[in-house]
Amino acid sequence: MVLYSLPMALGFSLFVAAGTLDSAELIYIGRILTGFSSGAFALVAPLYIAEIGEDSMRGALGSITQLLITSGIAIVNGLNINGAVSWQVISALSVGPPGTAGIKSNV
Image (cartoon, rainbow, N blue to C red; front, side, top):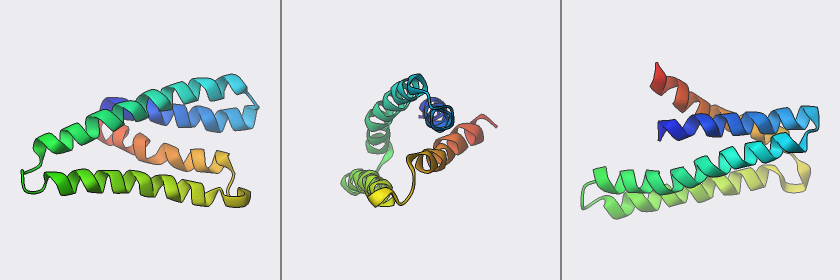
């Protein structure tokens, strides 16, 4: 999973750069990178949790994973209601979690 955090951080960084440089190509490349990483996370994370979780906790752990994913989507959409926070700021904030995961694991 750490392998997929760096392309995701790079993709969100390209979103931020695209906003300042006004470049559609950077948005496309960033979308490919974040889409690939998000798809990989959507497959690998629940599988990993199901494999390491105890039988009695497996269902709860899987449910919490989905709850956290949908909560994150709701928070990001809530930030952008009526343009309250620009998409560049949301993208800049989104660099943090995957970037931190990629850096901490490589140290």
